[in-house]
Length: 203
Image (cartoon, rainbow, N blue to C red; front, side, top):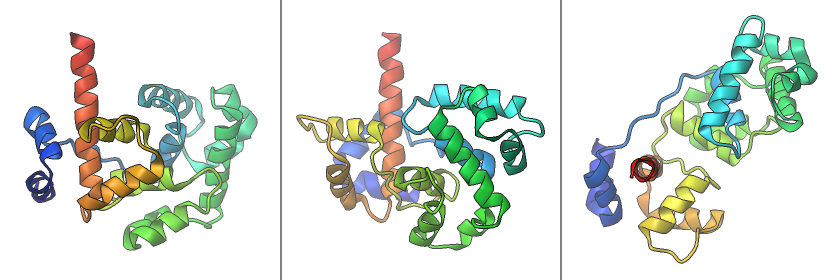
């Protein structure tokens, strides 16, 4: 709450969101391979669609969502379970990197933000958005801003009354004022965006 209080004191727009909807949820996720696979599945699709696909794949993989299970069925098997060709390739690449020790997910918590992101982004298919979501949701880093997140961009446009949705570069520039709590600001913006969508669907 200290970070939320700091941001509310500094930014009237964020203060309005918190006043209307309360403090944002933590949205914490467990560390490890399954969570990173789920974040990959969330790339450029709705969270609901990704969640449904993740559950289906996990229940149908022998042994559950593990690197060994993923590599046993391979890209073809993952595609048969509903993954696109590209995401099947990404998930297999992650499984290979974890199995071979090229990336140690357990060690990320001891790294700086930049080092952890660089480690993750060695894996094909993991870029700045995916690594940022892992740092924010799993490692709970307070000053991570997920670049290119459409929901955040739309929330920013509304917050700042912009004539159009900002670009990735513009959004990152606007978010600079919230350091060292950019991840907390992102949570507030997501919370307001999702709450307003639910309210709109109820009306």
